[in-house]
Length: 492
Ligand code: PMP
Image 1 (spheres, rainbow, N blue to C red):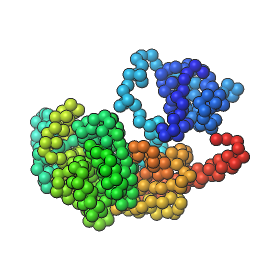
Image 2: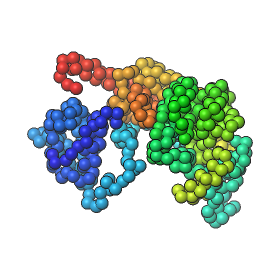
Image 3: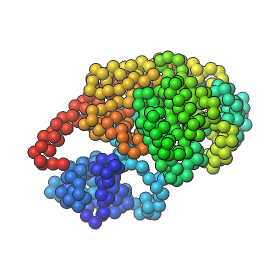
């Protein structure tokens, strides 16, 4: 074939996905011409020491993407498109640093599958666009422009538009100087990782945890340690055992309506975590993105509000309470940290869009944020309950806890079904969601999927649950066939 293909490695995702990615990279580099023939699945399987079905599935994946096609009598050949994607020019791929490379081939493959047109998607981590207060924003933006004129289009302090900064501080009961307004809380994660983590430093996260946080810490070269996090939240015994042997730079935790598990840490557990932080001098990053989306019972106090020792840096966002297109989040931290992060932030984007901040401030000041939350909370709660009952009805073999808030159901599959295989089958039925492995720094999450219940109305939720049930059956039947075939000693 004239091209070297990387041998799939254990622990880096399904072999066929690794192989497809490796082949696609060669095609992207223009190493093959239209009509070139790939080795037969038998030859390549032998060369790489993998099963033939791995190669067949990799070729199928490439064929779905239009890179290659099977031709009778000629095997698998490169299509015109597959060859054309590799253009002349610099070796872009070779120029990239590791920071810009995908961390896992499985992740890339999941994103590719989720881009399938027409998919009913439970994959998003955002609320429902049908309730976004677009009209109010349009009106208030005009008012702000009319009243403040070009002044508001001028640059703005690094730490945030002062009235918004003060509004956030007042609501949280802290000084404005402890607040920094961010271009989304993702920027806060990046800033924290860049400010505190040297390559090789230890960072403790929950397993599973928010994939964006993993990306930020990985990009800074962190050695990431995962502590199990289940229906009661972070496992404090496991944390203590780890702290006895590892001195981390940061602990990153989502104590309220966790992404992806939906779980919340009880107040006594919050206090125990803070005691441990004090005992070990542990800096804690609390990501509170989902706090305002609570559906049952009184709001939980943030870790930061319970903290007497000054161990907690608090991060939150308007992306979930309002909408992600705002790109406004904030951090609360001791003043010296805020000052350092501001100057670091100077390198990234100077300041958050001032017109957006001024509009958001007016929106909040007029009580419209609270009114919006009051409107959407019961709707999301109803959708959560609809999804739970649709899954119980159509796919009773699945297990999950119903969270008191947030946007997600974290669904456990049987040991035999991987989230990745189920997603492949579900995409064929027209349904998308996220697979559990994306939320783990190392291995783990293979038998979980994350479903967002807030994005679609009841009817679509039932429809999705039915599609999921069909896909589950299909994957279950394959498993039976595979076991029969294995028993006869044919394949894999
Ligand atoms: N933290 C968590 C836990 C999240 O789930 C998300 C969004 N999925 C973010 C942070 C990022 O939010 P933002 O849009 O503010 O960058």
